[in-house]
Image 1: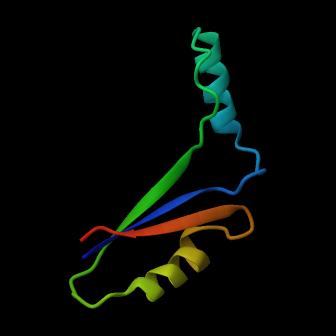
Image 2 (image 1 turned 60 degrees about the vertical axis):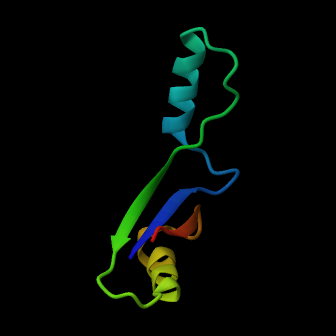
Length: 78
């Protein structure tokens, strides 16, 4: 079983890397892209067939993300 945890900044949190990428895209002449949201993900592989969603949620909130500035979303892949 695999859980994928997506993490990105909460709305209103400045992301200098995404802003720099956006500026470079504009400098390249592309004016149609309005916004870039940068994030990261973790794939957590489990041997057991038991659903560990609550445990993965706890790990995501307490270890993988900073709940003050980041959101996370968990997807069960299989």
